Length: 183
Image (cartoon, rainbow, N blue to C red; front, side):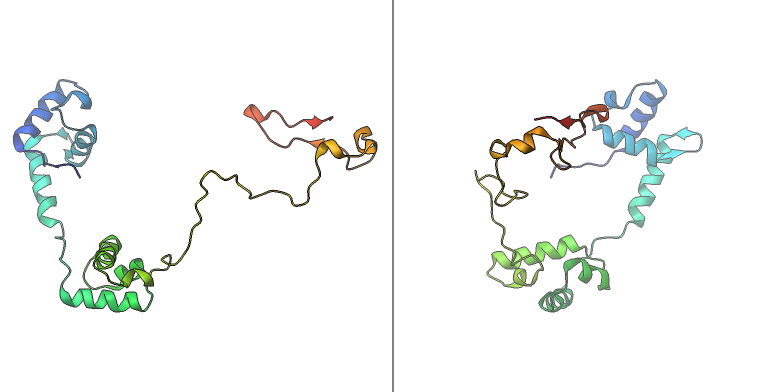
């Protein structure tokens, strides 16, 4: 994770000056473009971007933000009980009284696994075995007992009967390449 630093009041004054001068976001302050875009979008007033107003808006948002609650022992017990009842972390996060994300619950489960715990075995996808296909051909979609086109009878090659014609149904660029094959 990168070290993120919030914009200072001095930087906000520089943003206002550069914005008024018509500089694009890439040239401003050496901070990321997304930071500049977010700053100008979030902290703009009805008459434009003003640094003092922007600082007040940012401070208000910071004060109103809900602080992340740490997982207390009681919350951990409740989470582990529900996991052992085969609840998903998403379901658990939805019913908890304290706002904890499902991602934080997953982190707890994986930490438990690394400490020798068994909570991970109650996850819904935990026992699913996946076969990796290293270097093998993909055998999905193959027709069983198929006969090579070279071994077809001569009557098929004459294409006098219904069903002897083959058509390429792959549609290419500009809806082209859907033509009858006269092999």
